[in-house]
Image (cartoon, rainbow, N blue to C red):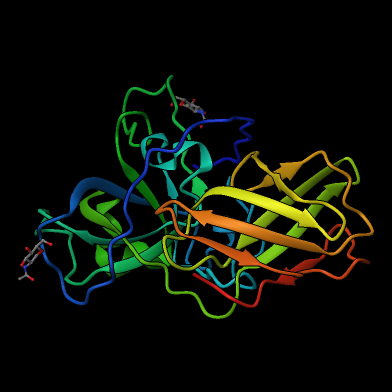
Length: 251
Ligand SMILES: *[C@@H]1O[C@H](CO)[C@@H](O)[C@H](O)[C@H]1NC(C)=O
Ligand SMILES: *[C@@H]1O[C@H](CO)[C@@H](O)[C@H](O)[C@H]1NC(C)=O
């Protein structure tokens, strides 16, 4: 079961290089983990989640998503990262082929449980949407050993910026991030300010206490592989909390 977790942290990011996409399966450069599924075939339970994304269909992630265990979630810094996963070493339940998913949720540890503690540290675990699990394994398996690696996130269209919060607490959720997919640092610039460093809040939310209402906003986003992009004049001066703007370009 996956519950929404709220983290207020400033944690440094353990970098994981994003690999380039590749067709077929090359067994070197893959890491071991396990996979289960949560929710039903509709994936309704996989919406929302600890990264802060909301309607995963509208936001471009669809059902190709997973909740990551503590060891992989990295306090939300890996939200938006993409992984290629295949079922390995379980001839009874594994299906051939691999899937690509985006990290959109957290699979919380449960320290009172003594069995099926897949999501407890230090275990690497992917709690997949059911439709994705069924592409790599038989439903009856419940849990399967998998091999995984980071891959480039292939996203369509620009990075989107959802503006939340209030005048004294601007909280920005970037989503549909291509390339490495996960974000290491972010800055915002109002039309009357210089660049302001934002702090990571829970999930993939970035915040500042500087009042920026009534100003057009630009963003600088650095993904986990160190690549930074400028998204200039993303909003008009009359932007409102709750609105989402298209950054037009992507990684
Ligand atoms: C698999 O990947 C490794 C390391 O990236 C590379 O050296 C090797 O040539 C690849 N093998 C195949 C069959 O592509
Ligand atoms: C943790 O595991 C215990 C024992 O199985 C269970 O009773 C409890 O509901 C679990 N907690 C959560 C949050 O799932």
